[in-house]
Amino acid sequence: PVVNSEFVNLYLSDQSELKNTLNLLAKGEEKYRTIVELADDIIINTDAEGRILYLNPKAEQVLGYNKSELQGMLFYNFVLPDFKNKVIEFYNITNNESNYLEFPIINKQEHLIWIGQNVIITDLDHSGKSNRLTISRDITEQKNYSEILKQSDERYKRIIGNMRLGLLEVNNDDVITYVHTGFTKIVGFTNED
Image (cartoon, rainbow, N blue to C red):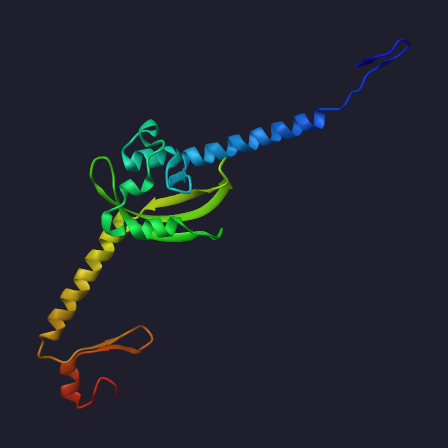
């Protein structure tokens, strides 16, 4: 207020709209935090160099560390050496498109875990560098099943390759998908025929 000899000037403004906006923002942040905290995905926020700034409980569970141990740790420390350069390059994305990469990590208990990870660039930090938001899934089981299937397929092909019989594979549309050389010798056609 400005005091004058005859008048008092008083300036008021309605803060109810600002207060409502701040309340809505707080509610939205609380919903977001709840979703992230309860997610079954590994959610980690890092700075541009890969230092962990935030992680959700699922990340703690998979990595085997608590938040205080992980805060400030480089995410690359968990990546197997053969994949480290590829992961670092992946983190150095320059656009804001979501990117996906699968790679193995080692947790605190020294278990090998394959993760499938999406990374997007998020807000700028105090130095003007952009942070990274990573959303990952433990895909170890799928990788293990894929390897078992691959080995089974190789074993099947070796067995078939040593057979002295003719074999022809046909899919559900009656299209020939595989012809064993023994079959071609029996019928007198080549694989191309």
